[in-house]
Length: 449
Ligand code: SF4
Image (cartoon, rainbow, N blue to C red; front, side):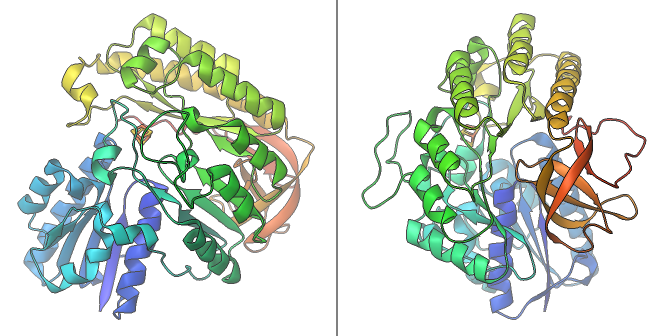
């Protein structure tokens, strides 16, 4: 029996795909990349923006054609399956079963029973740990699932449910198994990892649940397991405490890469987004990070053109860029999601205005990325090389600060950890000694949808 699992979206979905594949492998499936060779196709979807939803629709269309040609079982999984929009789509394209992201452990019953659907958030998922992937150097470990926040543009609390922390003992066991399997980098995952172990609720003053360590304590524990690199993503500014900054500073294995989504630079927009902090609070957190971790890489997420964003609001995002000097930014134009408060209550702004603002942001980010990346020229850094780069004779990897680095394959003939000297920087790439800088423009991470 052959299965093809298609993953759209974030690192949590990649982790869930590994959990799906582990369950399938346990009942005898092997895996193929091509839907035409598969007896079973599972589509693990994302519903955060319009683009991945359209991609899912197009893949489901191709799968409906395949089902007309030959017997093949199709399952719709992930965030889209949790939403009425996805359930209508699943029925329209004739999928055999649907499972929401909180019902991964229902996969085997779903395979046995066509027409099966499950959208309940299962308790056992909290304790579910897939076996270590084989032959990889870098792996994800979920530490929390779901989100208690209510950002007005975001569908995640609906699709992934309220925040749940996994017991620390399970996390440590999973990390230990990954280390034993040869993994050198773990990425601790959650919608808001900083609120790991906290009691239900919101805000900066939540107490710890009985028997749970704080996120800072968990970082220290994972950092002592002997892995060279420990990362975490994603953080919410409201829970990014001094204790977490201290844990990063004191724990050599924890990479000094902090992704701290700000989303907007104006207090008016932050309030309308229900982000729970102000521009001033965010800048104070950045100052605290910079004072304790002067060499940290800081990246962010920005939504450009949120409904009602004025020119003055947008200018404040630009001035925030100048105040923080992010190393990297993941820039998105606002995309309305049905079922979110922003879609219900606020009027959208013209697409052309959103795109024009995004272009200005990209230019500003390009400037600051270049300044930040140039700090590394002449320095010797650790790179985790993961495989070949697009260009001939080059390998590609990441620094501890998550900068992409290209390295000559004579220096790094195979995946692994290397120490290299940085010779050049562009706004999106570092070049190790001996790696020629190709002609070409700035590759942005902005998403136009
Ligand atoms: S913190 Fe906000 S943006 Fe992040 S997952 Fe939760 S609701 Fe969505």
